[in-house]
Length: 356
Ligand SMILES: *[C@@H]1O[C@H](CO)[C@@H](O)[C@H](O)[C@H]1NC(C)=O
Ligand SMILES: *[C@@H]1O[C@H](CO)[C@@H](O)[C@H](O)[C@H]1NC(C)=O
Ligand SMILES: *[C@@H]1O[C@H](CO)[C@@H](O)[C@H](O)[C@H]1NC(C)=O
Ligand SMILES: *[C@@H]1O[C@H](CO)[C@@H](O)[C@H](O)[C@H]1NC(C)=O
Image (cartoon, rainbow, N blue to C red; front, side):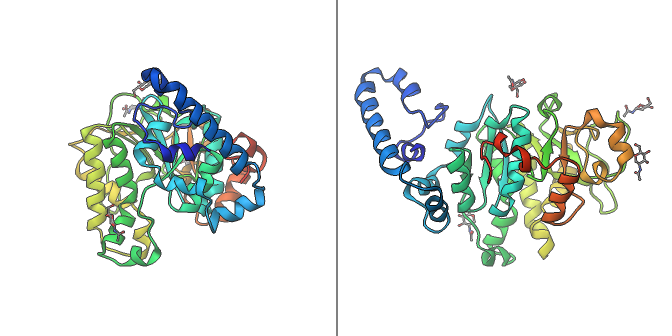
């Protein structure tokens, strides 16, 4: 039902909830209210009775992937501008980019965000249509797909625009979001929140990030960009980034895209945009206000999961944990389970997506 309205009406940036069309518009346009409201009510009734009720769960799941039903298919036209105006709170959004196999991780991450009361601001950037439909079916308005969806063939042709599009996608999405005037927090979904990260986004810096280096630092370490390591650049993680809609943040995203374009191609590089992010930070550190988040609150998985002494010493300080420094889907899940951080087994009811 909700996507029906979404498709029928142009959305306006100020409209906070596109799924309750009567309220905000009716105030500004009193004369159109009654007939509009009647029509909308009738449409809702028809849609509810005629479309939603007769579907069994099984029918819906099948149609979702092979033949998306017309109601879900309309999410194809849900734009980034509309999605941002719907999910943002206080001009801020939390985004992740997810393809279908990562839905369990998305759900785990989401449950942890629900517990901090920030899930309303979450926008899932779907990497495929199945993810777009699945998330919006369960949680209308919280997923958007930014075309093009790349097939593996184009993505692998080095030098092609398809290849460039593939690697440059994450900074390009973040650039679009800050250009539209929003603060944005990006997270990989193999992360989990143990506390509210927003109080740590202190001051008015342009770009906030965490270090991916596992060596223990003093609690009062500097918040400046870490020094370059053996590869001539720092090892900042592209997994967790907070940006303000400033010239400095936009510059870093543009430089990140340029660095990706310039880097030599290899199969492993294509999915790894972290080196380019670090070159962009290092080469432009004078032109943007950069802020390294505290290690005790935002540790790399290489520290949190591998140094039990450190983890115990800093126990009450952890805010976001990244399940990295380990390869493979199953291994990540097992490790989260071992640390009682895999919430989807017992707490799926807390997720806005429910049990997947
Ligand atoms: C809203 O955002 C501003 C600036 O980003 C921040 O300082 C403030 O604490 C936020 N307010 C709430 C209620 O989250
Ligand atoms: C690459 O992205 C641009 C801009 O988003 C788009 O117009 C173009 O069609 C894409 N090309 C390929 C091959 O995906
Ligand atoms: C951290 O604290 C130590 C000892 O208290 C001090 O020597 C050092 O300069 C401090 N470092 C920073 C970056 O403030
Ligand atoms: C582990 O953490 C402890 C406590 O912070 C630290 O003293 C030690 O050097 C760390 N071990 C390694 C291998 O980094």
